[in-house]
Image (tube, rainbow, N blue to C red; front, side, top):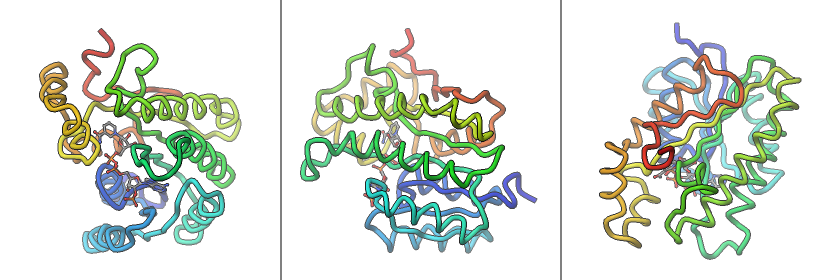
Length: 247
Ligand SMILES: NC(=O)c1ccc[n+]([C@@H]2O[C@H](COP(=O)([O-])OP(=O)(O)OC[C@H]3O[C@@H](n4cnc5c(N)ncnc54)[C@H](OP(=O)(O)O)[C@@H]3O)[C@@H](O)[C@H]2O)c1
């Protein structure tokens, strides 16, 4: 028996990176998992196959979360596949793309997150939980400067966190909890690699200031842990302690 038997979860952006590992961990704990992807169906299908081969339950659902119709389809797909929705991990993120319009970071990291949270809350039962994944660079952007290349993304993710946090009273009325998980730069990810390429030495600097940078798998373990952790709604988990941000 797993701790999440009979539960179902949507993890946005889970065809790769932190989302994919979080999906595998939650499925390993018994949850039926919706592996959401934007474009890369083969990658999402591979994650589903791995989960099924390990004895878990998963379906891949393509949805661009900046499109409301896709958001509704994503929530409907979870209900159809697993009979309900208990866990929503808001992991998908972006905004460093240059070809999707000036306001894309805000549309994805704030507006789409809020739309999905509200749409999911319509079907989530009391006792459900929504987890928002962010970075220390975004969580602390009002107090601590970040690299110019990441600043627009950081501000949009912080705006997203604030907009979602404002929903806590409405969620509490429905018995739904909200938790934020924030992490430092993650070894081996596309974002960290791009930022280090733009500013050589950035990763070494963060590694020495933080003491350690997490791998994708280690950070996913922290995200998955916050799905069931005994914390109050509104809790912000600063993974690794956020040295250099809190002191
Ligand atoms: N990377 C880091 O160093 C770091 C550090 C701290 C926190 N985090 C946080 O951890 C989370 C995951 O990071 P990551 O590095 O694993 O991400 P990633 O590799 O950049 O993957 C982002 C995921 O989001 C999906 N996505 C992007 N736009 C989408 C849209 N419009 N609709 C649906 N899905 C969309 C992508 O799908 P496609 O592949 O189809 O585009 C991809 O699967 C993010 O919230 C990030 O802020 C990351």
